[in-house]
Amino acid sequence: MTQIQTGLVLSADAAATSPIIIAEQVYKSFGSNQVLAGINFEVAAGEVAVVIGPSGSGKSTFLRCLNALETIDSGRIRVSGSDVGYDYRDDKFYEWSSKDYAKFRLGIGMVFQRFNLFNNMNALENVACGPIKVKGMPKKEAKERAQALLEMVGLGTHGHKFPNQLSGGQQQRVAIARSLAMDPSVMLFDEPTSGLDPELVDEVLEVMKTLALGGMTMVVVTHEIGFAREVGDSLTFVDGGVVVEKGDPRTVIANPQSPRTQQFLSKVL
Image (cartoon, rainbow, N blue to C red):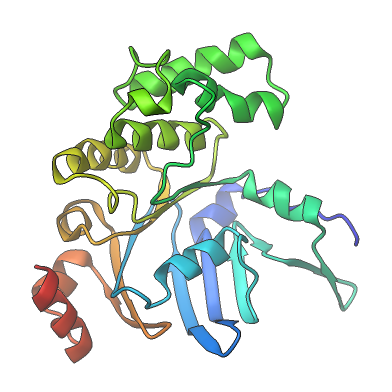
């Protein structure tokens, strides 16, 4: 396949006028199970877009489509001006190669429910690994940056510890630092606190709030309605693979317009 440019940097004028993420009529099925049924979604640069919905509604699948971990059946996804999955020029479509997909994913950080840390590496090595192996950063520089990121997430004195020596909340904060080490333009969070004990949730949410205050573009799939109300710039309710309602988080939470949104929020608030 033809190699294409998939850089995630927009000019100042383009960034001011274009959403950084655009999804139009996105469909995705697994066999006979249609998971996404025409998702439309936009995120502006610097926006914290929160996505909520019941289990099985397609939230996580949609997030994986944004990061090209899943390919879509039809529709269109654009991230920072690049069509995800193909290049269009000279009136022809050119499908991305595996290298194109890998290059694209470098610009998007993703934090999963499971921490996915390397158990044979300590926290510092987990964070420094990507820049060293993928970006070719000198080890000394990568470890200095990793230490700074661990300090940012409140784990500056834990770099020597291995994952099994850290709590779930600490492991998730290492996972966030590891994603940030790749200098992403966008951060995707797939229910990052759902696997944590209740008393550990706040320490992860505080790191996410810090990122939001710093202007990081974030799409957050979560059941943490308080986080959506406090930090979110937009709130999207997804059910049955479609966007049911979207708006200002405080307005949607206080006065949802869709009966389905009302029903869902009545059970989680």
